[in-house]
Length: 76
Image 1 (cartoon, rainbow, N blue to C red):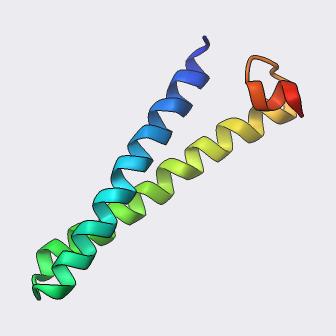
Image 2 (cartoon, rainbow, N blue to C red; image 1 turned 180 degrees about the vertical axis):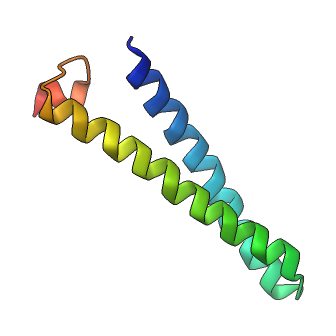
C-alpha cells in the first residue's frame, strides 16, 4: 500500500466524520440559536469539502499517471 492510498483513505474517513458533525452541529446550532455551534458546523463542512478535494486530486493524479495500485484506476 503506497502513501497516497493511505492519505486518500484517511482523508475519506476524516471527511465522513466531518460531514456528519457538520450536519448535526449546523442543525442543532440553528435550532438552539447558538451561533458558535452553527459556525463550527459550517467550518466542519468547509473542512469536509477540502478533504474531499484532496481525495479527488489524488485519484485524478493516479488516473493520469496510470497508477494501477488503485482498484478504481485498474478497473477503469
